[in-house]
Image (cartoon, each protein chain N blue to C red):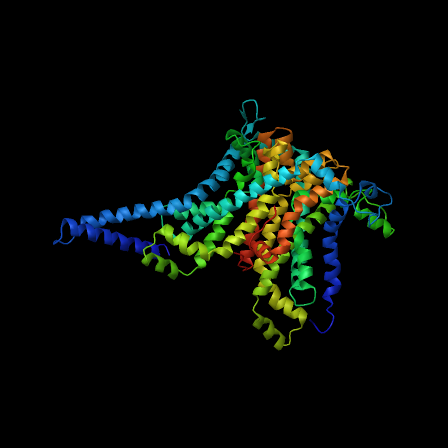
Length: 271
Length: 332
């Protein structure tokens, strides 16, 4: 590609390897017997590979159930985010109604409120609503978000109005214009929103942590943390659990890296 | 913008309705003056209903999950409440207690020190790596993938993986030190090292965010500007100092504010690695809140700490924006 060797390789190659090393270690350890892991002095390369960690993991803990729970939570969160945020975003971008400005400014202001400040009252709110120990506690906080509404609004503002106007002239109602004309154009923004929601809901630990105690209702993240508490010396099994919990998003990232990166560049995801 | 095309179309369809009805009732006379006023109100009602039916679901859910609990948290923060027995109103006592609490003070110290050290590092590294990754060299997509992939790893998984890598006996980190004939370290189990190790782990998961944002900003710099600078004889450093750096200023404010807010709230990583230990050496503010509320059932006190953190974060954020505005950087 380039004619001469770039000096940047000297920085980037070692750095990339350092960044990948922990993940490689995680994968390798999940196939290494505990006897090998606990040998002293430790080795970098195991003497043999075993799948016994995964076998024990699926025997000791309802990992399949946890994955399913997480999939349900993320699925509901994504569908609900796509529907509610695009409806709301469209209203704040294009429709004119009483209280619009006040409502929108209030919404954007709520982005400033940190989740951690809300965890105590939200816990009691959930307990009044009977959401404790249900999957609802995990997905209700992700049904929609002010950031999502804001993102969709910005996108709709960037669309030319001509098409919507044409739709109106052809006799479509506001709903018709929205569903037939605007939504199909919004696919890129919806993809960004979907990735954003997937990352947030799949990786969330806080809400399940404070609201779910029943192991059959754990999400995979909560399961992972509880599993660590119970099996903290069985590194092989623990790393297998880690691999299972992380693999879906890493695979998704490798397949759709461009989409993930674009989503991240538009939003702060962690925290 | 307010009276966009949709509204004028409402008008149009409203006018059609009037015309048709007029034809039926009074075919010869023009419509009386009162009629259009009535349809104008009707049209407004329809527009309001349509608008709110789009906006209400998202808006109501968001407000119910943020403003309502935020107000409630404030009420709780002025109560002595363990969640079981009835709450007792104690005014500002929780906040007063806070000022004297040595554990809270040390949590604030850890968090603030962490933020002050971490944010500049992540800004500089993020900018530097974005510049490094913004070129067409061999393996560039491999480098990007490798540096970005930790961003999708959850805090829980990162914490557990970190426990393994920094395990005192069997961990990779000490193993590498041993091979290099360096002394073994306590890492997460050492009071003096623990925050540094947590910072390192957090950097691993979080660096990609600033790199990605900087990378997007770099790609927005028009090549003409760089070209012009080059023709004018600017060397690499001058190009960076006078063209690239100024155009990255708004993004730097954004990333700086974002990183500050998220680092002040660091919690899950502490929960999954050290639980605030050893001996409270890695206790952060949010971990302190969690511990007070959900382990010790001191909900009132926990809420008071949460509100204090919110106030502090708000002041710092507004301060950063004010500073940015005074330096004439348009951040948003």
